Each structure stands twice: as C-alpha cells, then as structure tokens.
Image (cartoon, rainbow, N blue to C red; front, side, top):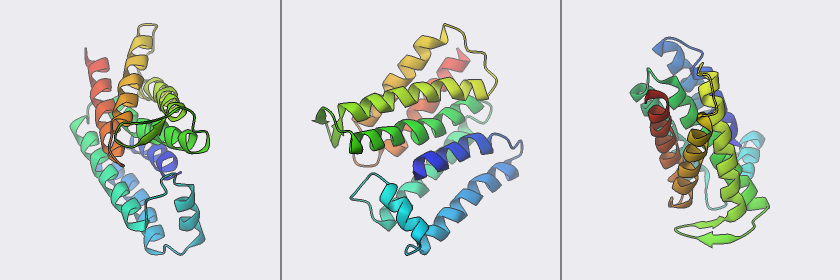
Length: 192
C-alpha cells in the first residue's frame, strides 16, 4: 500500500513542479507524513499500513529504512535524469505499481512458486510484468511523448527486464534495483 500510494504520488506530483523547491516540498511532504506515522507506530493508520504491507518479516524499522533508501534512490534518479522526466516517472511507477502488484498477487494468489534468492511466485512475476507494462506506457504519455506502435517492443522489453530484476533481487533490494533499471531503460528508449 505504501508502494502504491507513495510512488504514484511522487511520480505525478513531483513532476508538476518546475522548481527544485517545489519538488523537494512534494517529496518532503510524503516523507514527513510517513515519519510521523512511523514514530507513532501504535496509530491505527500505521498499523493498517504495516498489515497491508505484504512482507511479513519487516518491522517498523526495516519499513522505515526501506522507504528512506527508496526515496534516496528516487531523488538521485530525479536529479540524474532531470531533463528526462519520463525516466523519473517510470522509476516511481515501476516500484509503485509493478513491485506492489507482484507482492500483493504473489501473497494472496501464489501460483507456481520458485526460488532464486527469495521465495517468488509465477503469478506475482506475471503481475510485476503486466503492471510494469502499464508503467512504461503511462510514464512517457504523462511526460508528453507520443506513443506509436514502435513503442510496443520498448514497453515489453522494459517490463521484462524490470521483472527479471525483481525476480533476481535479494530481500527488499528490488526497491533499489527496479527504479534504477527502469529509469535507465526509459532514458535509452526516449534518447535514441
């Protein structure tokens, strides 16, 4: 749930601002709300968010560290690809939609379990692929690119590589790998 809400908020709201101050305000607002919820971990809202989080082994501190590292990665991607907003948007959406869908579907509808570094499911990996296809479609559209038939292979390749990054990730490092991979791929797709 944190993935979906936070990543979607950051992807769409941060790109609305044209100044660094506005972007930092958008990121900071999300972080402040999350930190307040973390510190008041007995609050019903944070308890609900933690229960909706699909990783059973995470406690309050590991969730906080995970969110902070993900925000650091997304902030770095934002500044590295400042002139390529689709790269930032797809990084946020791939983690918000692709990874979250994989965790949710894999937890509640686990079909075809397999293990590389962590326990995964084929159904979760299919969800990661499908929602990354959506991220690779929506991000460039939102940033003003016209999508033609030639984009079909880019969407499929981007989603497939992000799905493989998630499948081969260890513990929660997919939150770092997926946005980096997605942003690099979108940069290549929109630059060449």
